[in-house]
Amino acid sequence: MDRKSKLRQIALVAFIVMGGVQGVNAQALPDSGSSAGVVSQPGTTTALPANAVAGQAQTSALTPEEAKQSAAGNVAELQQMIRGSDLSELRTTYNGSYGASLLFYGKEMTYYVALFQQKNFWRVIKTEDATRADMIYKDFVRQTVQLSDVEIRRTQLEAQKAFTDRMIALSQDRANRLQADLDVAHQQQTIVTNQQTQTRAEATALAQQKAAAQDQLRAAQRQVRELQRQLETGLPTH
Image (cartoon, rainbow, N blue to C red):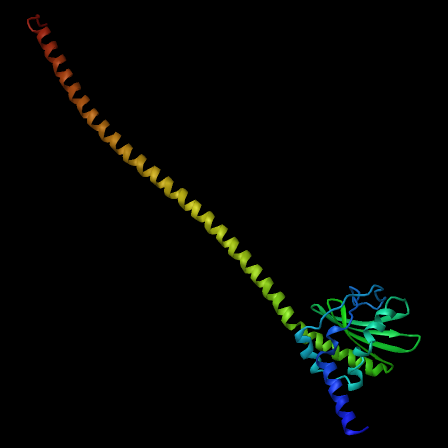
């Protein structure tokens, strides 16, 4: 191969790794990570996320030839095969909405390694080497860990914010109830104070009325004694 051909090949590989997989057709994976079977319905086209491109650029497990495979139709091929019953799912790992699967086509002893997001394929590598397939699968799993970091962090922050908001609401409710109790206490204190003032005024008035009544009683008693004395004046003594 001459120097110009090598340069063209290198440029093609770089293009495929950095952005060529962004327009591939996607395929949904099963909900669980078991190896019981593979879904039979095709997925939709999914654009490759920006952070996923960066993750692929850092992939060290793929050879240049393998890096070209997704653009060569592996996704479409797997879409067709996954509708049948001959393809077995050996392993699947989920991290957030990202995942990696290791699939096996026993009739041809061929392995398919898929990288996906939200159950949609956006990268598929095909190989007959079991060791190589396992290596690529582990590399894809590593990518899902990296890609899901921000997503998981966002989920945690959303939960923390919801928890904080709930605690704020509970604290505010508690504060409102305490304020209501305090308002009732203030109102009751005002009522008691007013009642005490009124009672003291009534007691003062009653004390004055009692003193006046006692004066009247003493005057009446003096009058009775005087009348009694006058009545008894001139009567014979024993």
